[in-house]
Image (cartoon, rainbow, N blue to C red):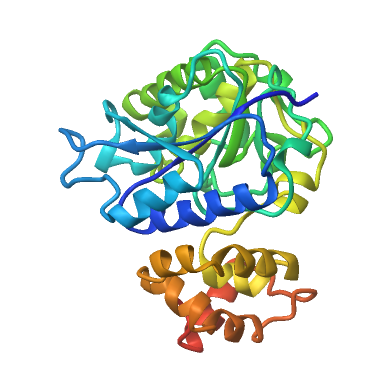
Length: 328
């Protein structure tokens, strides 16, 4: 059963700081009695960053704190500019040691009470809302089994027990693979330490089977299943339909939200973005201003039938762009 836990997201200057406002506001709206705290890990300037990555709008910082978020600085020691997705790996160290946690990307909107999700923190897991994006199999190169097994062997993990034997050999869903948009565990230091160890080792000394594979931007999603498997977790640990469903939405970019998400997601977005104190801050970000407050998102929505969406995301993007409504 679920118990007290902390929530982590990453906050930086630019797009992520405005997304963090939507995340924090929706959490407060739909989980007002949640036991636990929202932490926002903020990378600090230093050798791993060519510019200052911190929140660059003092009004955003004040608003986030008024919404109950605790903004905690951290130093990027391994990634930084070279791989910004590494923030979610290095940022875990800001959380209290030994306390269960759930990480969410900032482009997440909460739709219902997060405390109703029955997390088993001793069995970590992550988002199954993913496609077979990695590895990309070359005609004469290593297959899925050889590629993934080389990683499990590198870290002394049992590859066979990670497989979904209900899926065919050499089909991507047979292999443990997650979207890193959310994940959870019993201790952020245990989880983050292993995540950093695995990700850095894969980046710096990849197995020979990865010679044809790109690790940017996939490094976090390559290391994540290894961490979860090593800590005794796996796929489909949570009931389906809660996260990435009735309780949360990983929306990614606003045009895609308006194009394909259910009405309740759009209604939740409009509800939490309506108060003046939120509107006056986040409308400073041009994509939010155009999509949300100038109602261009509703024009995007009118282009699509949610019950009959194009089979590929790229086709959705292309239609929006063809109508000159794309923003990022």
